[in-house]
Length: 217
Ligand SMILES: Nc1nc2c(ncn2[C@@H]2O[C@H](COP(=O)(O)OP(=O)(O)O)[C@@H](O)[C@H]2O)c(=O)[nH]1
Ligand SMILES: [Mg+2]
Image 1 (cartoon, rainbow, N blue to C red):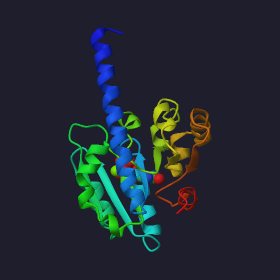
Image 2: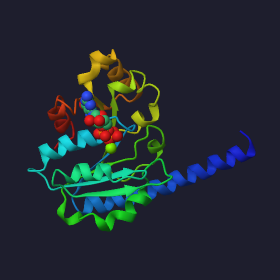
Image 3: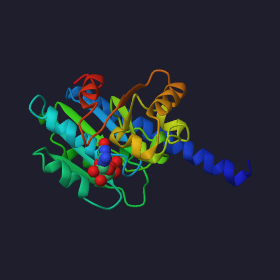
């Protein structure tokens, strides 16, 4: 590696370490408040918000829910969640391609932490950048979809290594896309044997009960 390359690598390592330390502090706050937390990562269009909307509908009578949605510039996802009568805080990350612990910390005072049992945090749509940046949640959910093609899992091993639950969404489209979801399940488990993998369709509701069980909610 060139000297400049080595310096960039060292700076990246420092950033990741500083993020991890802050994420641990944030997690401590969530634990003190008795809040179960999940962060949701995956590409734009995989169905992260759609899955969260179905979860919100099914869980909002049982738990006091809180949501944070991160997006580069828009409020669209927060508006979608708010339509279900649940509080949602939008973070715009601007030039950042991942939500960081620091960006989450900046909005902590806008989240009513004393009125929440379960918090979901939707990351910016990206399959690469969020891998290294944890945000202090208890469990990380990675969402990929049939429409991204069957190699989407094997091409993004880091995100699957860094996640606890993998959701393979849009299974209603498997015949149209000619994609075999079991290949994606196999790849995910080869990358991370302790992953829990769930096949879902946010459109038809298939697999959502199983996902709720997997989240232990
Ligand atoms: N057919 C089908 N469409 C879906 C499903 N989940 C999401 N979509 C659609 O995919 C698009 C992107 O979904 P969205 O939730 O915005 O994805 P996000 O960018 O990951 O949050 C929207 O048009 C959704 O209606 C699914 O399970 N099946
Ligand atoms: Mg979204």
